[in-house]
Structures are given as C-alpha cells and as structure tokens.
Image 1 (cartoon, rainbow, N blue to C red):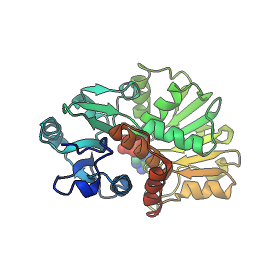
Image 2 (spheres, rainbow, N blue to C red):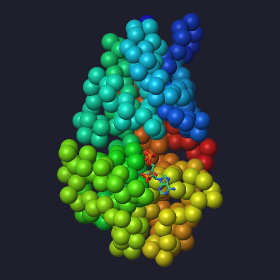
Image 3 (cartoon, rainbow, N blue to C red):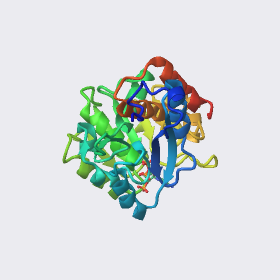
Length: 301
Ligand code: ATR
C-alpha cells in the first residue's frame, strides 16, 4: 500500500478505498496555525491521498505520541513541530540532519517506511530564503535582533552557519540571561563571535544597523506598542517582524513611515512549509504547487 505524499503516483481517484496518509502539526496552542491551510491546499493540488491535521498536545502526552508513531500501523508520515516543543522533540528522533543537530531544534519530522523518525529544522533556511527573496543579503551587514526564544535560535544559527555571514549581530532580550544562555549553548556548535548580547533596545544601535529582526511576541495583540522608539528607525534599515498576524505590527507601521523596507513573517512561514513538504515528499516542489501554498496563506492575510 502506498500512501504518503512521497508516492506522487497515488492519485485520489484511485485511492478511494484507502485511508489517507496523515501529516500534521504538534504544539500548544495550535488554534491559529495556518499550516493546515497551506499543506492541505498542496495535497489537493498534488492529487495525493493525504490530509494535514492539528495535534494539540500537552507536554506529558509527547512520549506516548512519539511511541505510537513508531507502530507499524500508524498512518502519520510527517509532522511539523511548533511552540513549545521544537527543542523537546529532539530526544525522540532517530536522526537529525546537519543543521537541526547544530540548532538542537526540530520543526519538521519525516517518518520513513521502517517508522524511523528524522528531524529537520526548516525555520532557519525558511527565514534565510525569505530574506534573500526580499533582496537582502546578510553578508557583512549589521543586524539587530529582539527576542531570544526558539525563533531566534534558528535565525542566529542560519546566519552564523552560512558563508555570507553578517559583520555583527546585536541581540536584545527582555530576560538578558536567556539570551546569554542561548548564545552559550549554540556557541558550542557554531562560531558566534560576531554576536553580542546587549541589555537594552537602545544598545542595539538600530540607528547604525542594516537589519532589525523582531522575534518577540510583542505586536501579536493589535494593541501592543512597539519595543522600538520610531526615532531609531531609518530609511536604510530592513525591518523583519516574524509576526504575520496582524500583518502589520506597530513596529512595521513605524518602519514604513520612516521609509524603511519591511517584511512580516508570512514569507518565513511559507518557505519553511515548502521545505517541510519537500522533505516529506522527497522531491522538489514545482512552482505551481508553491504558488498554491502561497495563495492559501495570503488569503488569510
Ligand atoms: P518563539 O519560538 O516564537 O521564539 P518563544 O520561544 O516563546 O517563542 O520566545 C518568545 C520571545 O518573546 C522571548 O524572547 C520572550 O522574552 P523572554 O525570554 O524575556 O520571555 C519574548 N517576549 C514575550 N513577551 C514579551 C514581552 N512582554 N516583552 C518583551 N519580550 C517578550
């Protein structure tokens, strides 16, 4: 029986009597996730017998869930992992690709025919692809980052592991100690000599920076103020806010007013999703399918 999306020959019309292969996302909370929209649209366009579901899990349910994944009759062939489990699930993997093993965070799991679990991190590459698609080359640039959670873990990793490394990265987090811990953990596996943790937003030196990235949750609520005084923003700055709902945070609105180039996190969500599906399907997606995925997300903007 061939069911996963990796079998691109499985056409829906020939598969009516066979239950679909299941893909999905684990995390907590999940009610706002746009991943089902994007992946189910892709499955439909690919004409594969597969469905993408939400698996909201409590932390104490993770072990049983992953034990079950190894059972021969489990119909789940691939997963995304989101907050707060990207680091936690590493211990359940049978293998990690090179990037995920350096980041120590997994957002994509491929389950093979022997029910072995392989972890990937497509957040870092997804971010980088979106940055490059926006025309921003990080090589030799001065970058300021606000936030030191899971998203920054992936972003810092990708920026430090590429050959087009930035000149400097200044990192601010509300809890400075957490930023330092992140640096000392990642620093064991990559060269972070260009990264400096700073105690305040002012110390980010945004006035001198080429790119400002927000990974904090400030801006998720429409009433949220920005962490950044608008006077620090300028025309030569590229402001990237990983928040995509609302599509325009106060930070992005302020940046636009100052003539800065801006992007929200929808592109990162899209590219990490494309890369995840490519891992599940063991193939490159063609532009038509990618367009379907992008449109599914944009409809929600
Ligand atoms: P993600 O995986 O999206 O990065 P996360 O790991 O929960 O999510 O990280 C959330 C980030 O938002 C953290 O940097 C957090 O700062 P702390 O480490 O000090 O908790 C930041 N954050 C959340 N609420 C914030 C607030 N009210 N002000 C400033 N930063 C905040």
